[in-house]
Length: 383
Image (cartoon, one colour):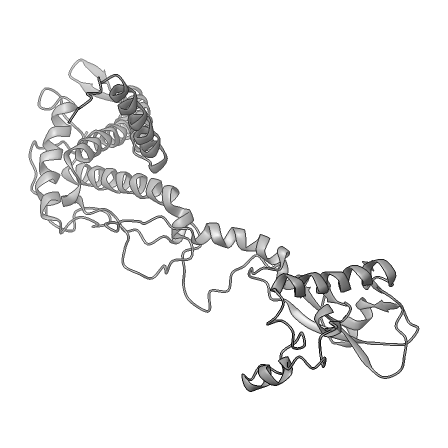
């Protein structure tokens, strides 16, 4: 049987890997042949023949580097996605970018509470008005929306049906009493100010108490100005009286706008999820010795897997007077378990270096230092 056998040495040339991600990297070009020699010897060469060629070793090394980069950047994305979402996705690759945590998405989430509270948010409040009809207390807001050509449901957020401000009904008993205050204030350009002309002689809390008295009087002695909104019907109190056209103003939201979960990015390409965070394959030269050792081990497991599949095709090899059974099952089983263990080890390492873990460790370190310092004798200096 003519089975290709590893010759024992190789000479890497760009273009000999499946994807060519790292072919032009000088360090990869050096390590490709070194890894081929390392892996073949770990598999028993030259004591046993290895049914592989240099291209198989190169492909395994390329896959291992890419897998390492994917794991690194996937963890980086998971650790920072809340800060990355909304950033431009067309910027340079984030491989060597230091990610600064921010509150952009936290604020975006909290804006929804501002919308409901009427103190900001992301959903516009529209204004509208209806004509009050004398003797008519009930108004159909659904019909109003249809008349305005508004598509879908609306939600009334605020109704401006209130009595005139107390300041407009303020009575100053000193106005026109001959004290000369009016002429003096006019000379300073203050004559048109309300309340009247007496606030220079009385403290401001006097005016506030007068206004509160007027409002309290209205609440107790007069019909309360209020409204209720039930099932699209707006009922106002007191019942409108008198002639002429009077308008009742209100603010409302269009629910189709409030329930729209998508943020208007104004045509810009932004990061929306983990799939479009701009990360490229790693720069092999900058990977430290810790990462490269993991890559060599993972690539070796891939080589075992490839060799196992090759030997599965040639399960037995005839030799003079007998035949040899190859170890296909052992290789594939070992490769599968080693790859799983290496991925788990790498992810566990990333867990220990996550922002959350590092901050927890720093906090524990601060507590420990405080406890140690508490036992140090404190010297009292007498000057």
